[in-house]
Length: 639
Ligand SMILES: Cc1cc2nc3c(=O)[nH]c(=O)nc-3n(C[C@H](O)[C@H](O)[C@H](O)COP(=O)(O)OP(=O)(O)OC[C@H]3O[C@@H](n4cnc5c(N)ncnc54)[C@H](O)[C@@H]3O)c2cc1C
Image (cartoon, rainbow, N blue to C red; front, top):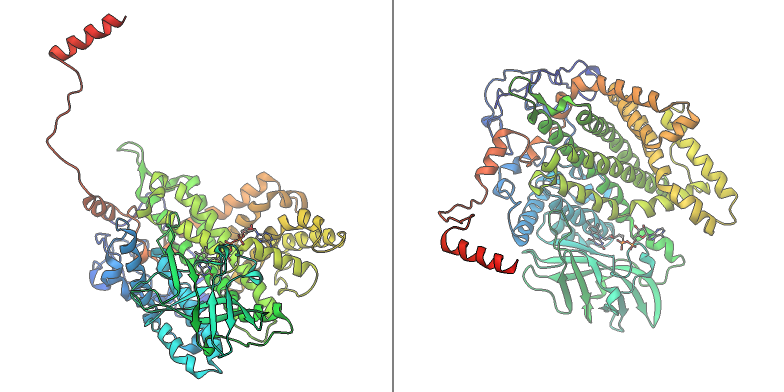
């Protein structure tokens, strides 16, 4: 198949990619190019690329320079390794899981993270959380973020004062050991303060770890042996002299890679629907002896158990923002698959064939998500640098984490479903990636800070004036006015309530919390995109996509009726449409796209590899001869 060229000028890029030409130093001067899309491999290494492109400025497959893309390329070379080239969609659960562990290990090793990267939240730490591996294998990325952020991160904080922990952190950062994080219990998800697992202090200074009831069993972490020795941070109630001294993390050996450790039992859960499989399990402890050093914190009762728990759970707050970042490569992959398929899929007779991209109903979700990708990229940059700044109040940093995660998950979920639906039946197959990505994003929304409950916490705190997030840079923008109005409305409602935990707050404020957090996120993202020099066309489309989410407010408060909003959207779409090819190409995630519908060659190779059923049998359809006569007689005798 030749380059994707259509009679529609989707690929003429007047203003350059996401940013105007002048905004980006090191802009590409000379592009590498390709003339056709004959290779099916996921990794088009330069050697595989055809030497000359027929449409150098317009081909979606032309290699953009890394200088044009913010998508991490650090682990790209791994795509040539067997663990990445082997198609896994038809494999068994255990085979898929094995590949996910291999991919996780290879990727972490490629990043060469140090303890410093984890402690300071370095650019490399944020980079690995935007790696496109997430689009290819969310299971591998789940293992990575648990390993480096939750487990190594919790230990690294302690290792600053306890050098004996440094080798454990190093083992985790080089994936010589697998690290897990056992917090959630069957009976306790978000109410962590009420965890039931006990770690009882013995006179020897050791601890004994127990699961006192079925509801205390740890839920989710993949503790099943998977080749590497596994250690875990286990969250348990410290009991000393019969007294509950609060929830503490403990370092606990779980298995040696083949067999569970004595007293630790894991039951493999069934698969999460539609995702790449993780060995999620239910784990229980029965009289597990732990050395005195296993506790990661003090054995004394804290003056403020709530504050102490929040502090010791710091890596969960980091996880809120880190796993929020994982939605970005997913969004890029949706935009890439949706664009490539909408150009490849045609309708009409031989003489008037049209790619479905012609239809506005295809363009809307694809262009909208594309604009959101570029705006979210700027937003992530802004949020992560703010979050990494330890001079800022912890509560504000946590709020920024929650706002980013809630906002990006909202865009990714809505855009992903919309694009997947516009790929018709193809969107439903796991081999086309989108069902997995959608379900992974639902997991992102829940893990490490459920977006709903996080929104409730943050909004009720901010409405009470406990802290403030950074104010708008463009206070007259539609999105800033919307945010301000929602916030003030709800502050007035709160002021009229007896107490912030009253039933009125439950009924009137709680349902507004997630929309308020999203409104804050939309405004902040807009400001971040303006500051980063994202092209105005993309910002305009982003803005109108957010306005559509609360059209009633814009109609009531800003005088923008339905027709005016539709016209705004249409104009914004028209402005972005000619740049689409370049914008999508420069997302630079195509090497990680394993979907089979993005090219004829990929599809043909996929069909070629399917299980075939053939034979020589014959099945008579119409009954003949004596049998038929006999049956007719029987039927007549019944009449
Ligand atoms: C992909 C994935 C991987 C995970 N990995 C791990 C892991 O490695 N280790 C681990 O410990 N855990 C893990 N988890 C579990 C995760 O941390 C929990 O799912 C999360 O903390 C929420 O707990 P829950 O699902 O039990 O929700 P619940 O606590 O049962 O809450 C369910 C719903 O109830 C409502 N609700 C609850 N409390 C309130 C409230 N106060 N106010 C208003 N509404 C409320 C909300 O709608 C909430 O969504 C993982 C989860 C996922 C999705």
